[in-house]
Image (tube, rainbow, N blue to C red; front, side):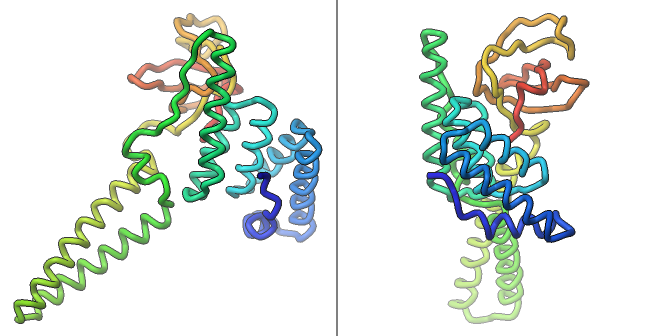
Length: 260
């Protein structure tokens, strides 16, 4: 279902972006108009409105959800996957976004199969990502901070306590806090792509040539399908250097790459 009640989240986002009330009112009206266009099946108009809000700096999971749904309705599944992923980055526990993401991946697989006789689209994230998919960055950071405080208190108590039962309890609590801190740190690393180059991105159009240089005349040995996951490394003129799985690198037109 399209998200209609963005008023609170949108206004909170706009409050940090707009210096005059009229600007906020204008952007909220853009959102309302995009929703009306979406409801009437005018998906190109809806997409243009939602994209206008993104360009204005609005970063909201409901906006990403609506934009993804509009792209899915327009059969632009690479873009739909991209924005459902963005919605889940902002709201990891959003079950509707996760369900619709799987539907978009399945629809893309069917679309590509119709063109290429057979096609596969990744539907499962790596195990490390799946483990922390429902946790937000703020939640993991709070967990790490709480575990650190608990460990400090337990160590302080162990120095002051002589009762064996209490020392055992504090020792167990300290060990648990270390485990929680370790898992939280690992989760933060996974969520922020620690150690990975560039940013997560997706190929948003089909049959795109991966070139050896940032030029249309550069040699190409492979063509990428819509929905292919890459790492966006750097922009060079109208091209983006990307990295595929297996450390293979090349250049794609910037208009064919959508960062998540």
